[in-house]
Each structure stands twice: as C-alpha cells, then as structure tokens.
Picture 1 (cartoon, each protein chain N blue to C red):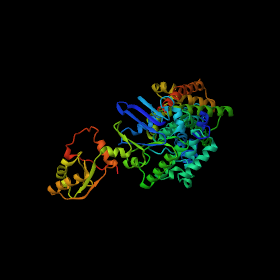
Picture 2: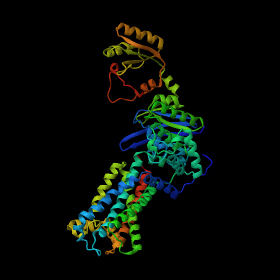
Picture 3: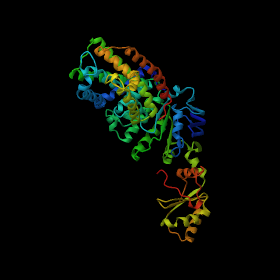
Length: 263
Length: 329
C-alpha cells in the first residue's frame, strides 16, 4: 500500500540498526564510561599493584610490565565489548523490540549484524581510550605504526567474532541480567587462565595445557607480538583461524535463533 | 468479500503445553475483530502466528490472502503489530523511534520523515517528539508504539491488549484512534481481557478459552444467545448468602452467582417480569433483607460468565455454593 516503493537491502538495514545502537552511547556517554571502568581499573591495579612482582617474570625486551600488560588488557576489553552485544540483544528481546523488528519486512540479518557492527565500532573507541591511558602511564609501541594498526585491527576482529557468540547466548537466555552473568562466567576463566595478564609458564602444568591452547592466549600473544615484538610462534594465524571458526559456527546459529526468536 | 484474516483449525504446542487447539476464525476487510479471553487463553499466540513471528504446528493462517507459512514477507509488508508491551527505545526520541521503524519498513528518508511528522501530530505527540522516550507516560508510550506500527500504512493491524495497564483517559484516546483507523478502512484484530473494550470496538467478537473458540458473533448476537434476563440484588448481610442462593435457585435459568466483595447475587431468569415476582416472593418468604434489586438485559459480562462456566472446571462446585469473584472491572 502507499505510493512509495519499498527498498529492502541488508546493508542499509544493518546500518540503520548499527546507528541506533551507537546513538545510545552518544545519548548516554556514561554507558561507555562504566563499561570501560573495569578494564581500565584492572590496567591500573595490575600495573601499579602487581606490576613490580609480575614484571620480572615476563622477559620482554623493554623490561616494563606495562608493555606486556597493555595488549592483554585490550584483549579483555574487546571481549567485554562482545558481551555488550549479547546483553543488548537479550534486552531488546525481553522488551518486545525484536518482535517488532521481526514483524517488519526488513533483512533477517540486520538486527544482529547491526548490533555486532556497532559493538565493533565501540571497541575501536574503547581501544583508543585505553591506548591513551596506557601512553600516559608509560606504554610504548615497539614495532612501528603498521604493526600497531594491525594489532588494533586483529583485536577488533576478535571482539567482533565473539560478539556473534555472545549474541547467540543473549538470544538463548532472553534477559539482560542472565546474559551478563552467563557471559562473565565464560570470560573470566578464558581471560585469567590465559597469557593476557601473566606469562603462561608461571602457571601449574595442568592449567598450562588449557592456557596454551585457548584463543585468548593466541590473541594476547598475537597482540603482544604486533605491539612490542615478542615472538609470534604462530599465534597470529591461530587467532585468525579461531575468529573464522567462531563466525562459521555462530553467524548461522545466531541468525537461526533470531528467525525463531520467541520472547 | 475478501477476508483480511482467515484462520482454519490452527494448532500450536509449546512443548507439552497446547496453546491453540484448533482455532478457526475470520474477519472481513475493514472490520474490527475482537478476540476476548482470559490470560493464557491463547490470544497472544494467535497474533504471533498471524504476524509471522511464530510458525503454527498445523492448520492454516492467512492475512490478506497470503499464507503465513508461504509468504511471510508479503504479510510483513502489509501489517502493523503492536505487542503487549510498547516496543520502544528508551534513549531514542519519539521522532527517532517512528522514523527508524519507517526506514526499516523500507521507506526512503523523505517519505519516512513526512509520515513520521504526520503521525506524531495525529497522535498528539508533536510537542514530545524531540524528547527521549524515557520521559514519556504510559499512555504516550502506547500512542507512540501505535504510531510506529502505522508508519507502513498497514492494511491489517494487530493489537495485543492495546489498553492493558492504561488509565481511563488514555484508554479512551486509544479507542478513538482505533475507531478512526477502522473508519479509514484498516482491518484490525485486537485482543482484550475487557468485555467493555470488545463491546465498544469490535464488529465481531470471538471468545476463546484454553486454546479453543467458545463462541463468536457480534456483541448483540452473543447477548441474544443468552436469551435471558438478569435479576440482581445485594445482600444486606453476607451470612444470608447460602439461604438467598437456595431461595432463588428454583427460578434461575442458570446457576445464580454470588460476588463476595459486593455481596451481590446475580440470577439469570427466563422471563424478566415473572422472574422478578417469583424472586421477590421467595426472598420475602425466607425473610432475607436485600437492597438494590434490579432487572436488566444481559451484558457482555453475563455472556462471558456463562460461556466461561461451560469450560470444564478442575474442581466441581456444588450449585448453591458457586461463587465468582469480581471479573476484570
């Protein structure tokens, strides 16, 4: 009905949803501030409280723990960004907003696609803020601008892939609080039992087996390699492979959940 | 005449729970169909199937001739859905909420802007357009949500309990908007728990309970079906209730009911004038004090009570002790 011709284009719809999600950070800047507070606090606490003790074990070229720590903090930060995707979708679901979207003739991909995209943009901003704070307390990139940009890129891609996994969790649990708790239960063991904050070789053997072979360690090693020139040991392609694997599993799964969503 | 909505033998189970067990109903173009039923009767499930959110297990559901199972995309282009809770972004303004829905519906910027401004004005939200929804009252949210589902100029509108939780003033506002839309030719399906709402708005009423259609017809047809008059009186003293129910029972067409909050006894009788004499006589013989004795035509409430009484109840209640509590309003 009506005279105008309807246009349906997944990219346009995705853009509209992404803009809607980002508008929230513009309207309520405290949202970003609060979600950054925890990783930034961990950055300061680890650097100033544990840094003295931990620094000696890291064996990095500069000898400064902050150079070891900061790439790890960025990894944790993009993971928190991914959690936001799940929380947001669960919230939309419980408020009936997903029902409204599903009753519209819009792309079936756009709601999750737009949300994951906006959370990737949020992650870029979060990384830049963290880098700024890092520079103020002594962090320095060691291997040039190209590698620094590559590190940011790969971190954002990692967070993006995780966004789809958290989207799936969010739509399964259907309410924001549960999504947050469920995601945190996943994130804590993955980040702390990894190379994000401390070298893996300081952990007991049984834990090392897990820590050495999980994606957060690959991500932290890759980020560290690109940021300060520690050995790569294949971490970069391993984390990229993980990202692709996560996307291959969770993109179809999340879209299927969306299509069948019942609030 | 073309059917706006056509549902045949619709079945939907959620696990072992049977939400719809063979619903058949239809509505003509430009008419308002009211689905009336208590909580959990299956009202929302019917709307979710018709608005393509939920696939039925079996049976057929068509909107504007399109089958939900075969052409959901066609249906989405022609419907508007307002769910039980206003689906709005708190941090976006009223304008942004409607505009975004218009863009996602597929309108270009110019058209979306034009329609959004017109809708906000029509829904009396022009002054609040630039405020975030978090500052809106319940009634304003409902109107805004209605605006969002009107942006595509739908030919069929689904409204799931459109006035639940609203104050009387806001309810009247929504009723007027619904009437206006129907006058302009929009086909509307609305669910409600309020008999008055169905009576006021619907061209046809379908009463459902436990996933089945119990009755259907216009509000006057439903009232005529009852073909009895109602005599009501209030007890002065609640201890008299058993004696009173016993006294009037011989003259009742259906089991008399007692409302313990108002102390009112309601007796459906076959014929008003003789019934009135009989009942006054019986109450007098039993020396029971009553007030506010009246004879009236059946209301939709009476129809509803009598229909709901036909659903098999889990526990059998002896006739004279049968009680029903305040119903809805």
